[in-house]
Amino acid sequence: MLLRCPFLRYPLLLLTAMFALTGTFVHAADPAIGPGDILKIEVYEEPELSMEVVVSASGDFSYPLLERVEAAGHSTHSLARMMEQMLRDKRFLRLPSVNVTLAKQRNSVVALSGSIGKPGIYPLMPGTRLREFLADYGGIADENAGPVIVIQKTDGTSVRIRHGDLYSENPEIREKNNPVLEAGDEIIIPKSEVFYVSGAVRNPSKFNIDREITVRDAIATAGGCAVESGNAIFWQRTNAQGKRETIVFDKRQLTEQDPQLLQPVGPGDMIYVAMADTFFVGGYVKAPGEFHYEKDMTLSRAIALAGDRQEFSSAKITIVRENPKGERTIEKYDLKTIRSGKDKDPLIQPGDIITVGGGFLAFSSKVRKLLPISMPWTFLND
Image 1 (cartoon, helix red, strand yellow):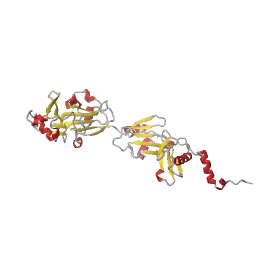
Image 2 (image 1 turned 60 degrees about the horizontal axis):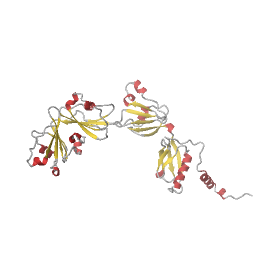
Image 3 (image 1 turned 180 degrees about the vertical axis):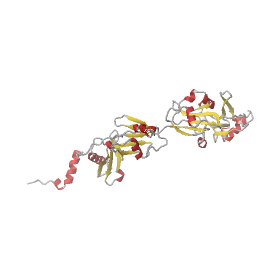
Image 4 (image 1 turned 90 degrees about the vertical axis):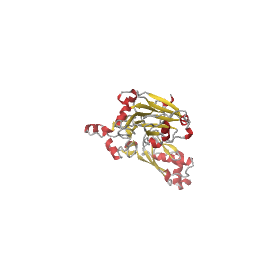
């Protein structure tokens, strides 16, 4: 006589109970999941939890509610069961039903990132070369793209190829620098660092740093000084301590092989060539910036043009000026005593740098479009 077992009446319930005891049920035919694989996760009646994810180099991926999920070594089937258990244990879903499929394996895809038209992870056809692959996914689309393409290999090594060589008119150079891609390659097109040259130059603009370039070369890259340029050149840079500083040159130093002008320009550096017959006013004024010089221009009138703030009328005034020998001098005045008539209102000169109430010049956003530099004039505090 056979014993009556209630589970035999419910075979699905029996299988579920067996699975709960074993924890995972790995299909022998399922490939193991590894870093770089793309997984398609579907959760029944939970569209916000259904998505594609990429397994990271450490073997896990980010997932809503569960944060990080360890995937490496699992089959798609065992990973789905594990995720169901996690969703139940954390009480996010009462009866979750998860399905995981392998959308792309690492050995059949290449990753694109950086200044490319369509960044992402794409299938790789055997024999595909770099130039053709880039063309299929938007090409190099960013004007700030750096001059070099980096191909990161799965063994940790990398290959660097210059744009000019990949697209050279010389067939031999072009083909030599157009390698066949391998499974798992990551193609990176870094953005180029840029510097800015503005003011009285023939071609004011931003320029890519594709080689070591000096201040003098940077001005030459912008077409050189224009006819209407003055003598002052301002170079704002980030120093070795990570602070922004401004160095002032005389235009005549361009032809004197001055060591400072032979220093390399760095990312984000701003070079401004002043106009002739102008002066600068900054500090505690309403409209700091560069102004046209007129004959017999007095200090108080120059400050008035920049919108003097009366609440700072007792502030100290500093004028930085170059004498005929090219030597920089500093003159200091008190605006209050000038206005009261106790001190004479001095005449200013073209190229003067006037600071009201402090050791810096603060330029407004309107002026900054023409003169894209802030002015931490460290030498004014000497």
